[in-house]
Image (tube, rainbow, N blue to C red; front, side, top):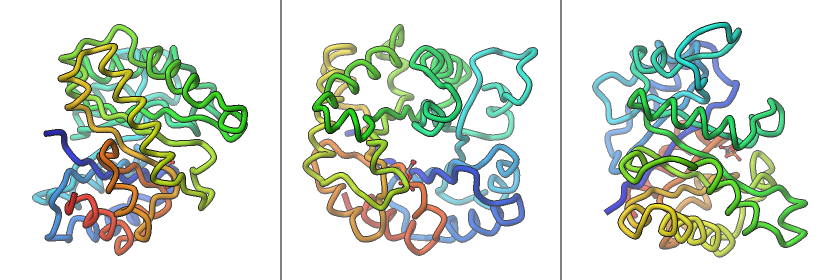
Length: 251
Ligand code: PGA
């Protein structure tokens, strides 16, 4: 049975003091029945780690560099994250692809480096509005999955979560319908079967992300191939995030 994973992507929000407060509020939830992760800005990781100590909440970061160390100003290595107590790292988020020149090649390199140091990866894929309107969603997802996971083994895939995030649904309040989300998550699972075999496909957690909130989470999570969520805006509101966690725990 694959894990249900509800992950909060805080993006560039919260100072360390604010992060301590928010992480503490999320960790105070005593009804967590699924895997819960908070992916905070780098400078908030220490404060968040202290605030979630002893709880069921896991710590995540939002990016990782592919090199071990060196002249890469502004970047953070997998070993650095690991030592701070990070378990998960988001790779290939569409905001990084759109605004910071992230390519499938760099996503693949970051993924491999993270896995090599024992981090779990939340790999994001998704089509733009233009691509959906042109009818090329399946082609885009297929190409991203094949390129981003190139060279990985079935064993490494045990530490990979895929997040399907249609770019047009992120931060827009526009959510994919559960049928649209299910269709692409099922496509991703069939691609994983081709690449890594039936067992890996069945065991890999595939999240939906894009304006998931307290009101629509249960509906989206009712679909057979949607095994969790990557949540931006609503993960910054403890009551809303708790409602999404409850929906994940009920699945
Ligand atoms: P959103 O962000 O929930 O605010 O749409 C999701 C994400 O970007 O991971």
